[in-house]
Image 1 (cartoon, rainbow, N blue to C red):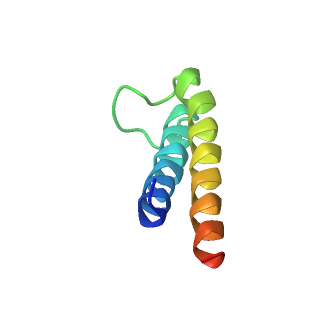
Image 2 (spheres, helix red, strand yellow):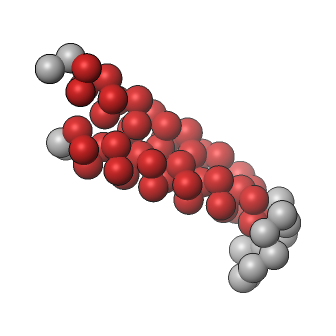
Length: 64
């Protein structure tokens, strides 16, 4: 996968993970995901995967 794609995909997953976590914890009261524990668990997992992709994309860019 190309480096810019890893960075963009990773950043999107981090943002989605944070939003999912906040909705699952009930801090964002919008939609059916609010207050559902499932999203409070899935959110951090997505954010960690996103961080790993951003790290890999950034690391690959430095090693050119």
